[in-house]
Amino acid sequence: MAETFVNPLPGVPSVESPFFQKLFSDADPETMRIAQDLREHGYAIFDFPDSNFDAVAESIKSDLSGTFNWDHWRDYGYEHGEGMRVQDAWQANENVRRLAANQKVTDLLSKLYGRQAHPFQTLNFPVGTQQHYHTDSIHFSSMPERFMCGVWIALEDISEEAGPLVYYPGSHKWPIYTNEHLGVCSAESDERFNQSVYEPVWRALVEAHDVKPKTFTAKKGQALIWTANLLHGGLKQTDSGLTRWSQVNHYYFDGCAYYTPMYSDPAFGVIDFRTPPNVNTGKRFKNQYAGHDIPEDFVQFTKSRPRKDVGAPLPPDFDPKLYLDANEDLRKANVDPIAHYRTYGHKEGRPLRPLTD
Image (cartoon, rainbow, N blue to C red; front, top):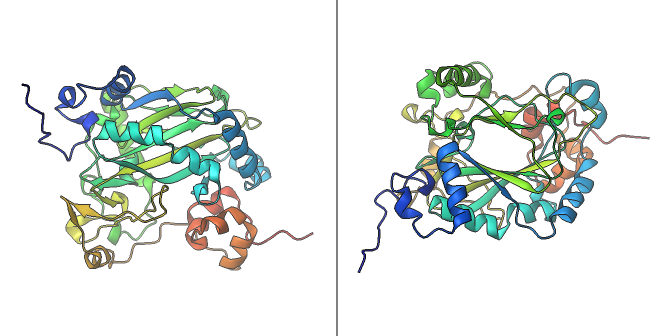
């Protein structure tokens, strides 16, 4: 009788484990295909498993279209490399939540990573992001590392001219580089600290590894899983008259500590722990380490050093209540109006107060 395999490295995602073959010995052919693609390339493409996908996608597009300042984007944002987005629309839009909470996708990710997956964030885009390639590992990370992934979904057919998704196959295998490797300390930085600090490093790595980008000109209903450390972004949109409707769902996995490395300097006593909400339950994640809950007083203590300013300055006449009144999707999603404006709203051209006749 064959012995049951006991994984000696439960803190490594199954798709990236040295025991890959044993962990997936009983996988069905489609799961194995996706697992092998993730392991080798850092991404995998599949058809999103929702029998009513077309209707769901059209409903999302119709519901969210009015939340964007299209005129500002076409007149200014497009030429300046900006995108438009709505974060966490799942809190107010049932169809956005439906795509994020899809049980077949959650079950697949749980099998691929060896731990239960949970969606924690959604992003909806009506146009290309035109975003510099980056790795999610500096924004959303975990201890043990790499227990995070994204699922990008095409809500319509997407052409080269619409600024498709771009990614660098194999880059997920590189080390996860954080502040300590760059020689920077976010807690002591006097300048605005964001991913632009990392962009020269990513460009140098792409050149050093001689890795070539690939683009995903997706058909409606196709989806792409990317691993935590895969470099990805959005190409320049060359036709401002086109849309590029898509949804990104981000997932964490059970039994980890969740944090933002870009704002963390552990050896300096600063860890920017995250406690995002579980899309399925609305309850916030618990930070855990090796099966133990991390004490809340420790979580708060490591945030005690104030983070430096990382957003755009507020206009002198900014009123948080009026900003939410002018942007109903943000009010329904219960977001912090100040943080939203400084991070996204100023780029999206969001109105500061309700428009008057």
